[in-house]
Image (cartoon, rainbow, N blue to C red):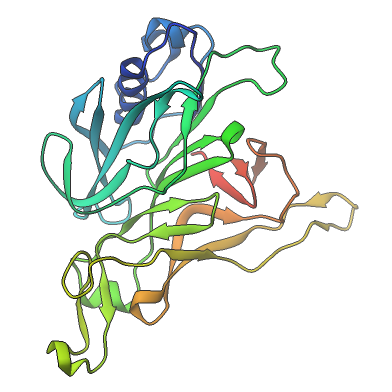
Length: 297
């Protein structure tokens, strides 16, 4: 499912938090269920993902909400998404992507633990939707059982909470998280709870694998790059353009550069499509941002 979320001049941050939380949690599935300022122009397309993947754990409409997400491939694995509201005199109302986060655990209120916060200098704010504007303001919200993606192309911003495949590290250390927080503007990701291959660091008394997130002496982790083979526009035997899609991967430098596949995300030729372009492959819609495309179903 994807939503083109559009607001009026009367919309406040509390409306945005309440609306977006409801969309992700599945209690809002059509425009007339939104706040008054957003119901008139917002567009819903597709179906909400089946199964209980997203559950709202906490909501303070004026401040933040926490939404649990089960891994689509193994629902026994659960993580917690933090949405943080913001009002900015320049950019308008909306989501403060810098303060958003992802955690392995949730304690109470808007507090997630074993967690990471968002990316600096990123905004997902909105102003009034004016259809005749050169670039009308809207927030694209993609909700599938594999990923949650937010796109604000007017600010060249796209973040997402995405399920990842397992590998030898994750299979051995089963408490590692199977959902990560991605910044598709800068092509990097945060892996808030995983393991690091340390080797023989005898001065710390550490060998082999150990937990790394916010654990001394390692108080932070560098972002993991999102990588893919660069593809190019091709043509079939009928000279019809073909968009070549390659898997998008996240490479974790903290654990021997092990690689995870990002579910529902593909890499497309750079500069091929404008952001928010919709195209269909094998009967499944995708929405583009930069050199990525996101499955909407």
